[in-house]
Length: 373
Ligand code: NAD
Image (cartoon, rainbow, N blue to C red; front, side, top):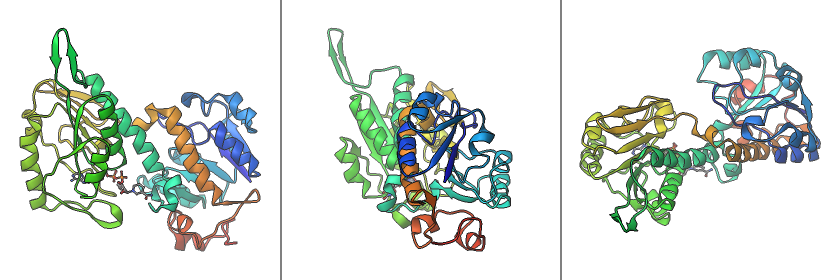
């Protein structure tokens, strides 16, 4: 099987889907790897390391992926780049085929067998392939560093000759993968950390990281271990209790999300108005509209003395480790497809059948190398 990796072309994207480590493993599994020169450069993996790991370095994207059987990527290639892939090729990455009609059409028109990794079922077996988790971990970590950088204060308590400095009070909104990493990171910096979530089982997780569970009296566990959307009454209850509490908080890190929906609006403009000058809000949910009403995606603004940051693609800002984890996730998934150096699709495996796009019924009717074993 020929596997191709081109440089990522999305603006600001520094990560890469293949590292020298996973390249070596794929070569050992019988694959041939063609890597575009510079593919790993922004993540600090030099061309020579790929060559040493057994890849062939090629001059451009067309040479890397134009005739590949399997294409690995982080972000989806542009529709015109998809149209230049081999008919019926397989592609693995964060592809979000439904987010952009042109992209979805390009995948279908080319008869590509796409595995958008964000569609993987979140089962125990899939954990080692879960790119949402691995990349959310980096985002949660970086969000706290941004908050610390914007805050006009120390995070830890300090006892100095110039008197005592009180520790910063951090509130993390949402205790998923990113939120828990934010709790842990803020604790390591010495802040006093509180966190809340609508899934009650998060209390124990927050406490195990040294955070305090903030009980707002709302519980809304939904399907598959995720949260559901709140009812209007539940939302009002959450908002009333929160508004009062925020007067005493220095830093808010927002990470709440409901799968397939815009981010829940949790921090209103009025709540921000009630915060002390010098407070900071970092809104990781900016990508899907923000948990804070005032968030502007991709910008940092000031509102009545409160800094509000809406950073995008934070995982890319930690490209070296984010790529290491992403590439291992991809390798673990691709291992399901490789038998003696060839691509084989076991449609009885739900990790394949539930992830593939177009959805299984459509894929079934195509031949393009996708025949069951
Ligand atoms: P996510 O990014 O979809 O959501 C982040 C958090 O926001 C969630 O904890 C959610 O409960 C919370 N939230 C939603 N609405 C809220 C509201 N109105 N107020 C407060 N909080 C709100 O979640 P995620 O990090 O991708 O994962 C969520 C959970 O899924 C994990 O904690 C875990 O239980 C499960 N999970 C399982 C696996 C696996 O087994 N393979 C992998 C990853 C995650």
